[in-house]
Image 1 (cartoon, one colour):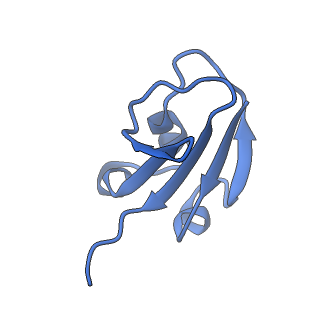
Image 2 (cartoon, one colour):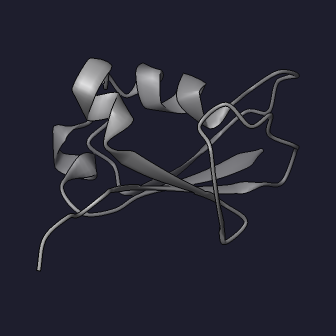
Length: 78
C-alpha cells in the first residue's frame, strides 16, 4: 500500500475530496499517476510539490510498497 496525503486546497479540488487515503501498490506506480487520478492536469499538475517519505522529489519517481506520498501546492510570493 502507498499512503497519500493531500495538503492545502488540493483535497477540496481533487476527485476523491479526501485529505488522506491509501492506494494499492502496483509496479511502476508514480506520484504523477496519483496526481492524474485525482484529476489534476496541465498547469495544475505542474504546480504540485511532491514529497515521498518526507523528501521532495519529482512526480516521475517510481514508488515502492509502503511509501508515503504527500502532495501540496507550491506557493510563491512573500
